[in-house]
Image (cartoon, rainbow, N blue to C red; front, side):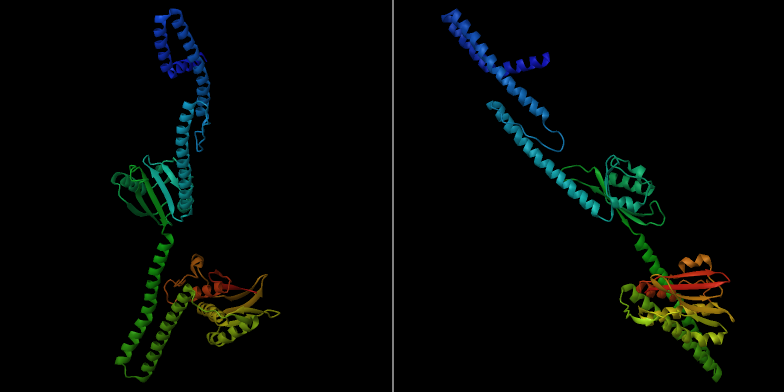
Length: 447
């Protein structure tokens, strides 16, 4: 307390130094005429100076108190108006500075809110790394994309967040070369393919480079589509090559044969291979149209029992010729559902063709319809060879054949097409199977 009082007294003396000097000078001059008068003048001047100083001291105390009480965070206050002219001028100057700082802080906060909103709305993962290789900023999409169990935070070292040598090496290269870099990595999971792009990040032209902007783009679906495309063309080539080879062999036989029966036999083989190629092309066109949403479905009210009967009538003669028992089970009380009958007939055709293919003589195939709370369930079951358990998850994929030797006829597209058709009817299709006991395919159609 004593030290603060001494400081205020000194400020009084220094703030009124000119007045003291003038008073002493005038007192000396007066003392030449009257020593007592000069001495009294000097004493009076000192008393007056101290009085003004004390008054100023009170103003300075208030001024000092308001300066100390000004906010120091994101908000800016203002100084009061002082009756003291000099302090009033000081307060005006300081208030102008405070107003300017307030505008800059508000602008900075608005820019931060805007930038955070933009970063958080981007689907790609965004990461900003500072010169200490610490996380400066990131968005929720990054955490979701990487799928790591580590919870990142601002100030976290990048080595603790992304533990991948290729990635960390790339970050080092960008800091050292100040050049853009990009790599494709499998981060955290071999099933995810991620394109990582890193570039120097300059806040302004005046500020030195001290941050890196890293963008993570998920390429997993693109890579899967690319692999599917390659697999598709490979399978199509294989399926077309087989009938073409058959046609070529039959044609060469016809060229050298003069026997009528041989000519008729190989002509039929050529026609069968041509039909096989036409079916494959039709199925590929149908799948392509479904993928593009260009397949037209004309749904009409149709009797469930009539659908079962029509399917039976289409395949009964083929089954009898092969010695297969075909049976049906209809609804006790018939109802109608809204379907594209030609498309549902295609599904039944695919399922019955597969059942006949894998069922031996004296085997059984059953077609049935039953009710659930929300759907009609149609089933095609057989007691044939069955499907290997490992193959069941892939049975509805394009070109998949449970017969690995591909010795059985068929394109491998029928079940994939059936799945598309049932899903277009807002239904579902699934399979149950056991080796040497048979298979059961079931699909649902909403009531």
